[in-house]
Image (cartoon, rainbow, N blue to C red; front, side, top):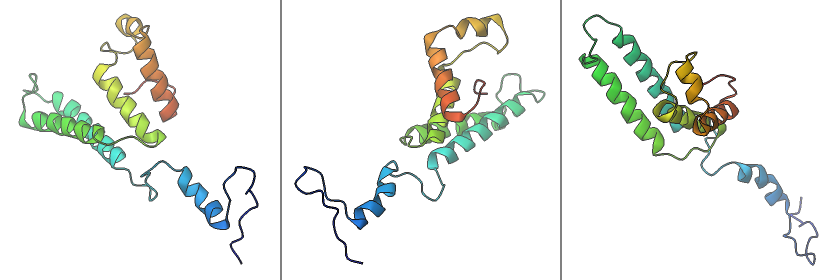
Amino acid sequence: MPNTPFPAAGRGLPEITRRTLLAAPALALPLGAAVDGHSRILSHYQNWLAARAEWWRLSEIPGNEEYDDPRSLAAKETEYSEIAALLSLPPQTQAELAAFSHILWNRVGPTSLPDTDGFREEMREPGCRAMLAIWQATSGSSTYPV
């Protein structure tokens, strides 16, 4: 089949060939988007979540009231290094933006426990409401990040 351009010449439009038409979907993806489904950001995010869960689990063990057990310190260090690695990459998908918004919520979001007056007061702040809206829009969740 010959590669005959669509007759757009003379109208100030670029010519559209079969080749450019077939390439259009790939060009619509964000630059560097993971085509194979692997995302370095989401890998770092999952590692961050696992490190946080491990730290919380270890915070309950007897004798670790000061959170100075070497395993707690290692989990906290992993948490920080995963945040640093994640933040070194630009988010390109909705899921990656959700990961960024969860990190943001964790670092600068409300400090009070949910279902308390303090939490409700903090949630009146525009910054907290904006973070929550971004999290909900990108994650599909109807609640706050945990």
